[in-house]
Length: 328
Ligand SMILES: [Zn+2]
Image (cartoon, rainbow, N blue to C red; front, side, top):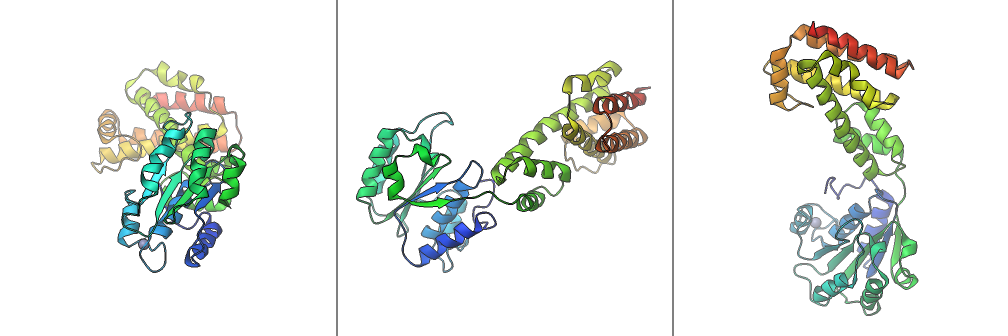
């Protein structure tokens, strides 16, 4: 779990409503948690499972033995199922597997919780088999069927579960969360990921991590050209990349971070945000502090130009040619 599922900041209303239901003792034996990809269905289900299995007072307390086991994703009364690969269907085999445990008493708690991820990927046979459990529900079990395509579930399945709908998160909340998670990351990257995520914290996180990896690799490749490549390699680097304005700015801010890594390696003060330390040390030995300052200043200047709507290709080509000066 990449984020602490006991965190109540997303889907707060739905979590609070579930806790009220839990304390009133009116739990349903099946819930259908619906919401688009990245809206937090899995975290919601884990949160709810923690509430059900918790032995503390204010459920989920986060500190009882049961909550701790859930945090480590190892609780003998929690069963999580889903498709084996993203593309595959969930077949009746899963239901047969569930059948092995569903009528047994819970191991440690009063209840057993079953989470079925990507519930819409259950084929008809699997759904029909699952319905048997809903028709004669064992007292001690609670099912959570997670789906972003509720219409792919059989009406009979939907009608037997209580539906919990999750909604998009405000962009400002996603930004605040990402800033907390990545305190050193460039704010423009965070705002851009949150902006593209359409209310989905999960999607924003994926975008940020994916994009960051690509840009990080680009900046490292560019550094290898600056410090140990030819002038031609440095000069032609951007022709192949075809960055748009956002990517160009991300690249330049990654380059600034990277020069800082090398600068610190030079001062034998390791704190590598981007480059592995041995790489930073290797480049540090090949250059001077003045040259590093020069690259960073040129990157800042190019960043500001691009931010002020100048021609992207021209600015980057000019940046590459200025940086090439350090080779002379
Ligand atoms: Zn607890």
